[in-house]
Image (spheres, rainbow, N blue to C red):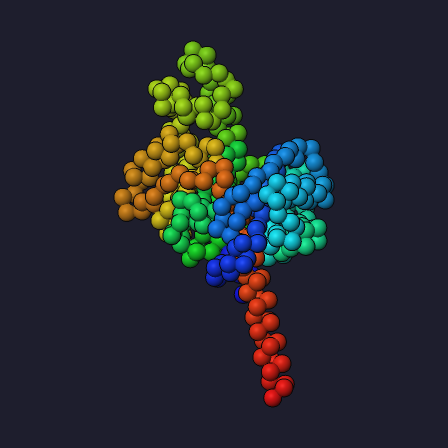
Length: 352
């Protein structure tokens, strides 16, 4: 079975025992400043890790070389060989065409545009590769091994420095026309400003609930006599202080939670998803989840999506990449077996 246009390749059956014994896959998390790799077995268990800095690196080929360096280091450490590598999958920040394996645009990787990263990886490593947006990859991780196991319809909200969503409908990642589904950071909700969208600028929702937006609002509201926190406090420090009773921090937490709850409510009305998984350094904070949940209960008693923390945390994207790689390897093997069987049958027909 070839790759599905919405969800990517599906795991259609268990790999054979021979493949279990010999093969492995690699998952890759490409960040703005760091690169992480995980070597995993056919069950998705991590058996090796590798990481390095990508700060200041502009060229896609340089990132590919680093990935290959990490692959070789993991192979050496595990006592395996390149021939045992069956597939690789990577998540990249930015707009990504997963059908063709192209990073269309991203500001995080020094302005990459139209980078055929999948083809570059396949050419260097000689194995099938899969590429997706990092938040979509994290959503698939939660679906495969995290807080959304067994849930066919849910939204993964990555709330860290910025805000993005991975949408899973009927068990498939939904990417939308132009691969732009999930760009919820640009949502307009009550309390946000209505301004023209500028390239490489955060959207209205992101400016309210993203980590950098929270810090900016804190700096504007900060007053030395009203809080014990410094003016340069981070979003998670502000939330910690709010739980401890800091009045100014509680005021800001209330604003952020209300804005997030409005966004979740609007998304749930359109998609009717019963579950929202909150990830990212800001989204994982229990104070934000509890406060947003309380607002949702006040808004409407009928529409009550469950808010759950990501159980994978910072590992969601790597897990998603690993399980995508397993799906790629499995589907390619089945295609080869079907072709071989067809060739055998055709040969028999010719003999007869």
